[in-house]
Structures are given as structure tokens and as C-alpha cells.
Amino acid sequence: MDIAEYIGADNSEAAARFLHALEGACTQLAALPGMGSRLTFDAKALKGARMLPITGFENYLIFYRATTKSIQVIRLLHAARDFPTIFGV
Image (cartoon, rainbow, N blue to C red; front, side, top):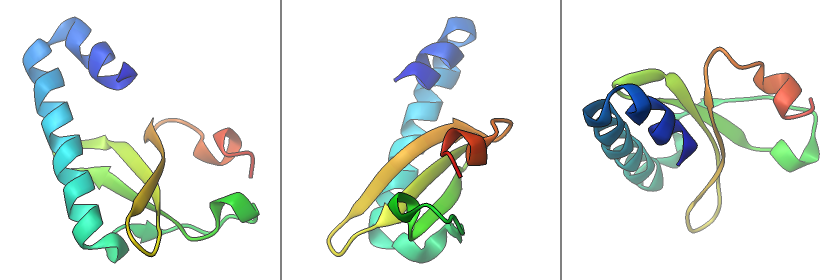
């Protein structure tokens, strides 16, 4: 994962903590998919999208959508990124 590699370039322990936190966040989302903040995008492809910061790495945001059986991670971005432009909305 590019983000973990970026973090690991300066601190390999922080990169390992990031991956652990990301895995934990995805496990939580699978159990409670409504826990993230709802987002409103006009783009049909992003209908139902939600966002959740990763605990311990709150500047990293998981953009996802709940399906009937799981969650679909759309993208993982740093909070400073212009996500409406990235998503083309």
C-alpha cells in the first residue's frame, strides 16, 4: 500500500501501526457500516458513499459504501487532499 510505504520511509513502526489501524477500521466498518459520515455527491457512482477517519491516523480517511453483504472501499485519502475534485464531483 502506497500510504504505508510513504509512512514507512520515515518510520517503519508507524507504518505497521497504520496498517493495523486500517485493518481494524475495515473490520469495524464491516460490522457497523453506518458508522461513517454520509457524503452527498451528485455522481451516481458515489451514491451512498460514507467517510471514516482511521483511529490514530485521523488525517487518513476511508471513503466507502455499504453493500448488502459487505463494504466496498472506494478510496483512502489524506484529509488535505481535495476529494471532491479527485472524485470528479
